[in-house]
Image: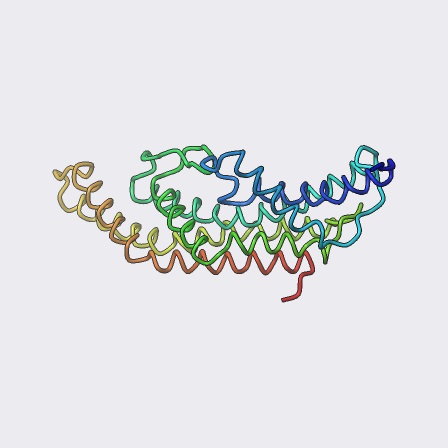
Amino acid sequence: MIFSEAQLNALIATYFWPMVRISAMLLAAPLFSSRQVPARLRLVLMMMIAFLVAPTLPEMPPADVLSHSGLIIMLQQLLIGIMMGFILQMVFGALVFGGQVIAYSMGLGFASMVDPANGVQVPVVSQFYLILATLLFLIFNGHLHAIELVADSFVTMPVAMDGISRNNMLDLVAWGSRLFAGGLIIALPIVGAMLMVNMGMGVVMRAAPQLNIFSVGFPITMLLGFALIWVSLPNAMSVFTDLQDEAFQHLMQTLRIAR
């Protein structure tokens, strides 16, 4: 069997372009990009999804993979995949931000541990929220929904030299404000309650100056902080699920996927 150069380029492009977009999404999306997931597993998953999706996709553009136009197409596929994973990553970032604010308000800012997903130091409260959010993400099949979106994106936003526009990038930057808004919604009830506790401790110190505030105040704020985290946990997870739904809706709107 003899293949011409054009046929060989077309065969390579059929699997290469989808592989670039899918791999970019897996490297940027939560859970898939975790350091606990081996690189070989990500590679196998990326290749398996690409080989399953490629035969059902529209015809690829007649561009050489190693040409100038091929480089532009590859950059567009990287941008699309990274955008999808980055939006989902910001949902988890809201929990990290909210957990940091809560930890600092209750005196646990010094208690940090390594986040296995990003390899950076985060407060233990943020790590606790991340573990619960990851379990909810798996329970609600968020990982399968992400894979479904990247597969459907090849139909609504096919492989071409144009893909992500300037307006899409501006919408992505604007949606990043949801990270801080979600984190504040999670942390605000606990921070407000801890503020009242600290004001009460200040009144006690004025009434009894001989009382050592450092030996009494820290245990009280920590115990009340843990109690408030337990009470507000359903609200925090509800905020996470709402942010997750908003992220998927924003992705479907950007990728022009109708559901």
